[in-house]
Image 1 (spheres, rainbow, N blue to C red):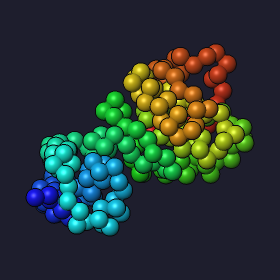
Image 2: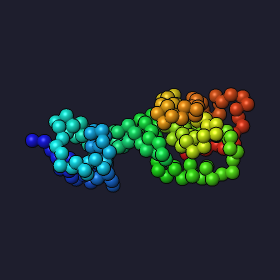
Image 3: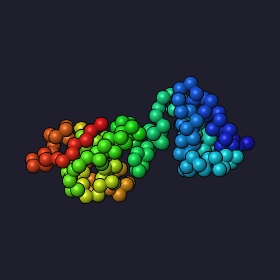
Image 4: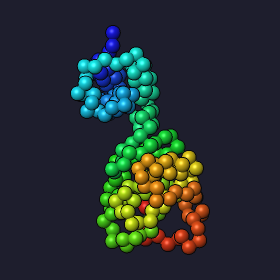
Length: 188
């Protein structure tokens, strides 16, 4: 007999109560990811039964979450600003409170064609959010980790922001001579 969506969500939430302050939300995100749907769909179709394959996949993710693995890593994505970013353990997960940095940066009196540098770019979240809001800015991100640079480039392409450049660099060390003049440098 197929397990209805609402029953799985209730059980998963109960299992996560001891290890997560957002047990219901975590459960919804995991199941929505397995089903390839959004969380609203889960409520609309809460009486639908899960297939054996869906149940197995959802339970596997649930066990990993109970063990402490972040939901963003389990689902491979995180929403940030107006973007959806791929995430993986090679970088930190973009946090909602970092969006405050974006707001502050956008309020600064910088040139319409500003040169912007994001130090320690990780997923590229800050650089990409700024570029999405200010298309005339030249935005560059650097990170020491090659895996992070590759992920940031993937996120740029995924969000149609391929004009943002990402380089592997230990802070300023790999930046070209003459590229050292920036109107704005951001970092989190």
